[in-house]
Structures are given as structure tokens and as C-alpha cells.
Length: 153
Image (tube, rainbow, N blue to C red; front, side, top):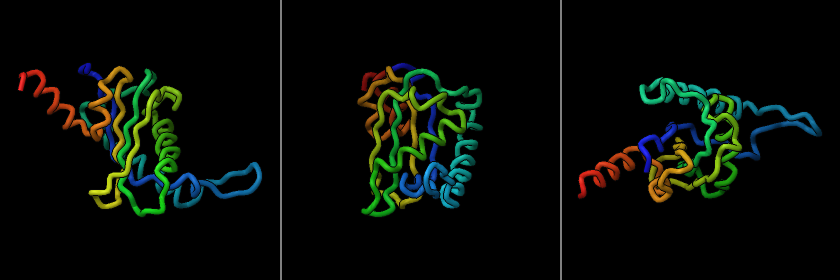
């Protein structure tokens, strides 16, 4: 895996379902109050992530990338795929991704061991080791594996 495989990492509030993002009829769509509130909270969390040293000079990711998203499951009725749109749209709106078309692969899964409070998003370069990306997307796991491989243990 390349040293620069990890491109971005953040926590977001659990994304709202795609089914509850907009109100309206016909061609007019209005963001729901819950969606606007989530966007604001998510924007603050992204700002906090961007202010960390490792992401300080982050320009929008324009290269092919892999998105890993672990979502705390709020209830058994939620559809996992309905969490993607709002999260990806926020990453584009906050200039983390230049466009959602740079995403070459997506790995999204329920993370049931934690309270339903967050979605953890990790973005890797498309040439990253997919086996490592799919192990949970936790940068500390990746760093530990890298150090183990370098020391031959």
C-alpha cells in the first residue's frame, strides 16, 4: 500500500435516509428541517477533521478513490444504501471530493457494536490495498498493519 493511500477520514452524524431529505411536489424540492440540521452538524464535523494537521492543506480529491463508510445502525428498519446519498453529497459540498464521480468503489456497512450516533468515513486512493480498506476503514488499523509489515512481524 502506498504511504499516501489514506486521503481523508472523518466522523459524521448518522446520515438521514434518502427518503427523508426533501419535501415538495412536482419539480420543486425543499430540504427538510432534519436534513438541514444534519448538513450543519456534518459540516462542523468535517471542518474539525480538516483542521487536523494531516488534512490541513486538503484540496478537493479529484483522483480516483475508494469510499469506506461504517454506519452506526439506528434501527433494523433502515436501509443501508439510503445512507449514501446525503453523506456523499455533503463530501462534495464541503470540497472533500471534487465530484462524486471520482469514487471508483464504495464499501458501506452497519456497525452495530456502537451506539447509533455516527458514520465513520474514510477515503483512500483507488490504488490502495483493498483488503486493508475493507477491514473497517480505521486509519489506526492501517497504520498498525503497515508497521507490522515493515518490521517483519
